[in-house]
Image (cartoon, rainbow, N blue to C red; front, top):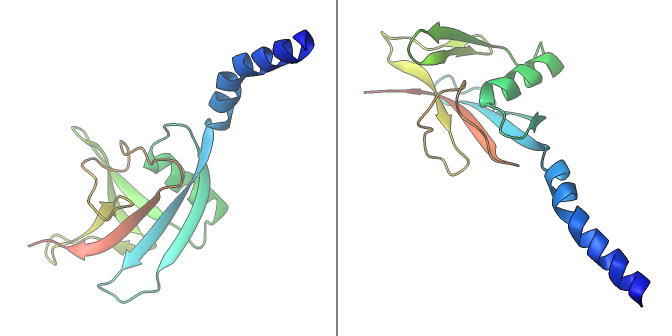
Length: 132
């Protein structure tokens, strides 16, 4: 019985370590939605490191699917990377179009691709849309 108690206590001590290791990477899904041009909805999934930014996930998806997922960013000296185009479709100031980042609940993110940290198993949408 003492051996059983010892093994149980040892397992309890290792539990936080095992949980921390399992949370070091997790999947995120990226949906590309272009409703302006009525293009097919595209979905990509990748594995990212814990607390990695969306830009890193996008780069991993591009490396795995270079012909099917392409994007361009422009570096703003004050705000970091700004998403300019996805799969050859670029925002346009005259047409008031841009790529909006939406969280899993459909609300816009308050930061860009270089700062947004997706939650484990989150689906992030890149939506080509307009502003007024």
